[in-house]
Image (tube, rainbow, N blue to C red):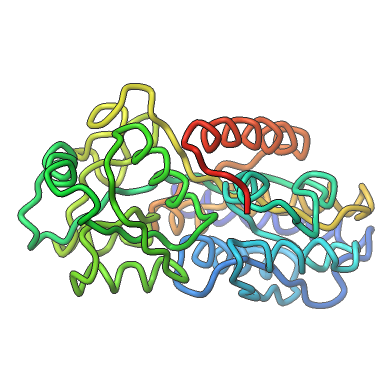
Length: 321
């Protein structure tokens, strides 16, 4: 009966949006979701799951285009300059709020160049070591780093990513001297840790399967509460510094000037997709929690996060380049 109820609910939602889409006459062709990362990371996984469900809702193909590089600014610049007609969506992460504090001469404004549509999902950042390292806690890793100042190195998926920010916050808070090695995405970062090319990694939840298989050991997570997928792993607030929090969130934006009726339709469609059993289950298996919002809530979030992380990076001594 529960399964039948879910099927009926999905059918009702799909029918309602099919009718609304016909009234708006949108979309009449394929829609693309731009992400500023290479394939294999958390944003890529979120985008492809969302694209599949939106394709069902709209009965139009939704494709994902990866445009990585330059700390997410290549993808953001491309999306900001696209025609504001609703056919180009930009799935960004908390990095969107970080890059204004990292780069002086952006070719777009993180708020003014876009129309907010909806939040998509949230997940923690993970502090990881190779299980063969013999390190069993964040305290042991920090003690090792302090005993060998400047000798340990660590990986992130790249400058501007949420793991990069979490790592900057961690090193500034703990005052350890370690060398950062940025990789082009979470996949290469995981490969480096797998081969023990680096000593530890700060990564997104795409590394979760390695933790579940026992290949990697998660020492801490950045969410304010323990991660549902790793309930035995302490938070950074518990293991490193009280109050430490750097949740990774994602959202959908469209180019500034996109008509309000299109933005509203996209918001309703995305909320429907995120509330569907297929997406909820798919996201949970990948380590994400679906977190839809209104456009206004997303705009407020971006503004507050830009201010928050500017202050964090200034305290860490990170200056824009």
